[in-house]
Amino acid sequence: MNSEVKSAGRILDLLEYLSVLREPASLSQIIRDLKLPKSSAHGLIQTLAARGHVVQDAAGHYMLVEASRHGFPFRRHEEPLVVTAMPFMERLRDESGETVLLGTMNAHCDLRRLAKCVSHHPVRYDVNMDAAITAHCTATGRVLLAHAPAEALEDYLSRVRFLSYTRYTITDVKQIREVLAKVRRDGYAINDQEFVTGSTGIAAPLFGAEGNVIAALNLGTLTSRYVERREELLLKLRSTADQISRALGYRR
Image (tube, rainbow, N blue to C red; front, side, top):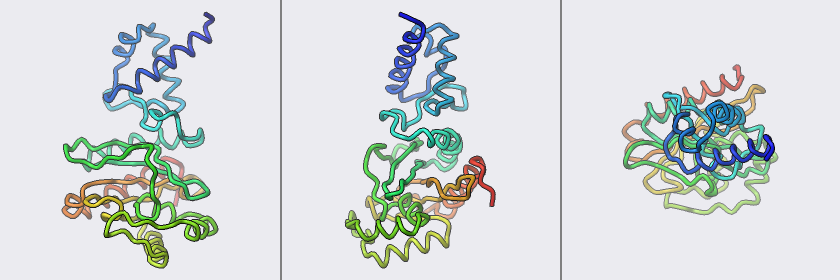
């Protein structure tokens, strides 16, 4: 077996190994479990980190980013976004105690989750990374719709059937337009039990270096906890979104 084939096999072994772990692994643990030479293991890890598939926690342990657990669904140009945002997301999760999500939207207003940092609280908000995201009644969707190009937004509003998921879901197009206008004015969006009864989501836009909105940062929690901490959670979310935007090169 030549060296290139051996390296390819090792990196696949490493990806498969990390994909089933739910806790970060140290380099020594990876070397021990996979029986890899130390120099090879370090090189493979650094390659995956440079491509946005692996990140380090505060203790220096390694983990696969959530999006990479599902067949590398995000496009290459989105990888730097995940890598840049992840440390901020983890800090927001730890400081707020709530689940933090990163999502984006394509030209057809289709939404996709890129990454998540799940709350450590025993009763918490969580989502399946592969599950469809409904734009009109989720905080992430509303932020991205509010900043979508006018033509794309009009196409979305004209072709989509707005389903009701709870008794709180807004399905009237005129009301949806009003909600999106408010999102633009306020700088954030709220989903108050419109998608899942008992859960509330808040989201803020992430701006790229060109000044356009490229993603949304979402904080999901139980409605009861949100009511008690509304101002605190909004402040933490918006502050973190601003920090990520600056890290991406955005300047007001």
